[in-house]
Image (cartoon, rainbow, N blue to C red; front, side, top):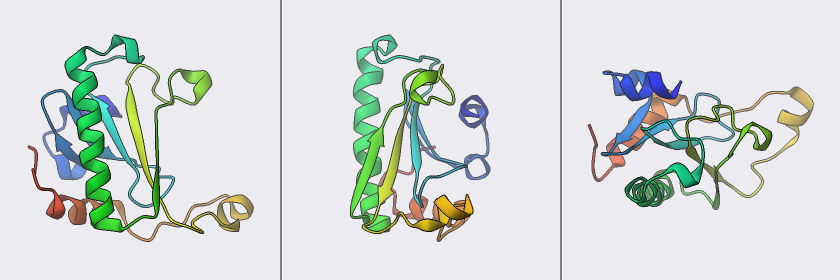
Length: 141
């Protein structure tokens, strides 16, 4: 998934929202909540210790920028920001380090995911992509 997105020539289709020198941002195809983004390193690394100082710095800088963007666009009450390092920790793609950004709202968890086994999103990925792309101060590539 990450490799396809990073090589994509059609960022809209791949839902790649932003690209910098070492980092790219994409919408999660299976979001926990509306606005769920992933901030990923281009290079294949699976642990924090494998990042060079430039990647580590840029990863955090872009993460901060995306929190600011989501705050402007969606007005969440908070965020879950996290890394799943290793398969035992829930990393679905353990060789490609990425930060999850999940906007949260008071009361956004209810019975539907538990009872119905499904998630309800208020906006399609394509519509969200367009909205976030319009609000980006630096449009990326």
